[in-house]
Image (cartoon, rainbow, N blue to C red):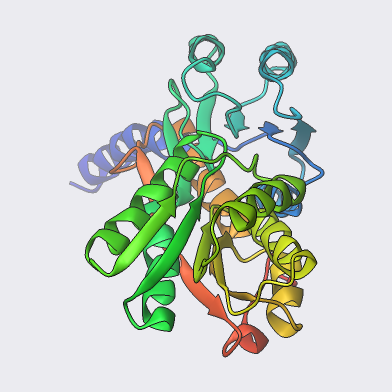
Length: 312
């Protein structure tokens, strides 16, 4: 009887061993290609990814590269990652649709691919801020500040999925408030401070009364505030999306920037690596699109805000 029980235990252990090995496959080499490492958002994202990878495997190699919003450069970087035999690629797609052939090539090579911040066709999964919600809470703040009535600008940006979602979220809030008049919603301020400055200068020249502006990111918000100061236009409520280091300063200073729906690039990256680890072990996420909630940072609560560069 004892021999039979021992034999059964040995067989059970032998069956369980492959499963245990499959569950513990480690990440050894990770490639990350991001829009621009000149942007603190992507710097924090890269740091978050490396921290999580090193937590899972201290000996793992992590390579983070700046694509500089150049699709051909991003293609070359992905080819380089494939040649280097990485286990996981995190990609902030320069072009969500055009990147698909490169990501399919990576997956055929047995590499797990996770998109970060914006959608990427061909990725196994994507982790990003709930950008629709971010647009909603920023523009709900504007509605409340204006008492449900006023002339507003939606300052648009590059037509990547994150920007489109933010604008759609904002529009859905304004539509519920019939006394909010949207003067413009189609001007691309390029996601930059200079772009926000230029577009806002044109709007201030064109429209004698502007009560509020929603910008799709913080650099545009800072440029918008600068334009208003240059033209001596006051009492404009500016709200945006990002929660970037610059906006923390703006919220604490004498500016017209009043709020920003924050993102957490460090956490986005950590979640993406977790999903990548699971994919390597045959575990697909329940949903291919993972959305992390945004919280509103305002002048009232900025002192308690844990920003992108906070120690983790």
